[in-house]
Image (cartoon, rainbow, N blue to C red; front, side, top):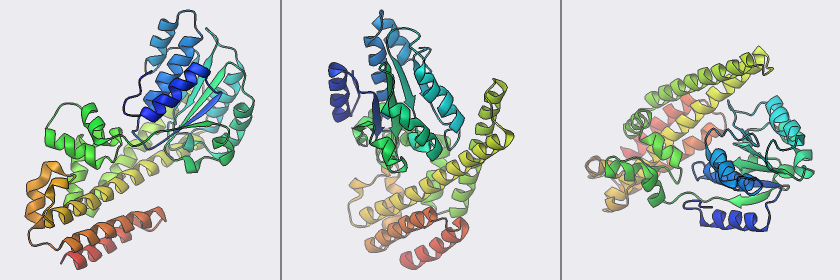
Length: 347
C-alpha cells in the first residue's frame, strides 16, 4: 500500500498487513496529514485480503463513500459524535458477521469528538472484539481521548505534511499563491485548500489589514452556516428513521456552529501572527523566508523602516490572544485589547 509523504506510517501499516492486522489502531497526527486516506487504503487491504475477489473488494472499499457492506465509516455530523450512532453503527454492528469475505472494518473519524459516554461504551468492543473485526480510530487531538481508549489501540503516528507534498497536491494556480498556502497551512492539506478558496483569501486579507471586526464577522457567518448544515443533515437522518429528539438535533447543530466559529477566528489570528512574523523577516532583510510568498511587495513596503523586534512582539501578542480565547475570554474584548497593544508596539 502507498501512503504519500508518511513513510513511518506506511512502514508500520505494511508490516501489519504482512504479520496480520491488530484488532484496533489509533491513527494520530495533525489535521490534513493524510490519516483519512491512509485509513481507507488500510481498510481496503484488510477487506481485500479476506475476500474471494480481492481486487473487487479493494476497489469498492477505496470508493468514497464506499458501497462495501463490511466497511463502516463514522464521521461526526456536528461537533460531536452522537452517542446512539456510536452504539448502533459500531458497538452493536460489530457483533454481526461479515456480509461477504471474512473481515469487517470500522473507522471512527475525529475520534476525539466522541463523548466520554461513547468512549466508555466502546471499551468492551476494543477489549474483546470478534476475531473478524478491526477498528481504526482517527484523531488530531489524542489528548482528548480517554487513556483507557488509547491504551487499547496500536498507535500509528502521522507527521505534518512537508511543504513540497502539499504544493504537489494542490490544484494548478499561481505558483506564489500555492507556495504561500502550503507554508501557511503548517502541514495541513485541507487548510491549504481552504486558503485558496474565496473564504480563505478573504480571511487572509482581513488578517493582513488587522481588521478584527471583519474576522469576527467571517467566523460568525461560518458558524451559522455550519449550524444550519448540521441541523439539515440531522433532520435528514431523522426522516430516514434515526431516532433523535428535537433537543438533541438543536444541541448538536449549535455545537457544530460554535466549533466552526472558533476554528475560523483562530485561523484569522494565526494568519495575522504569520504576517507579523514575515514582516520581522522582511525588516531584517530576510524576505526570502516569508510564508506569504505571493505578497512580497506588500510585505517589503510595510517593513520599510519597521523595527523587526516590534514585528516579532506583535506576533507574540497575537499568539497570546489566541491562548486567551482558549480560556473563554470575551472575544470582542480580547480583540479590542489586541488592537491597543499592537498599536503600542508598532507605533
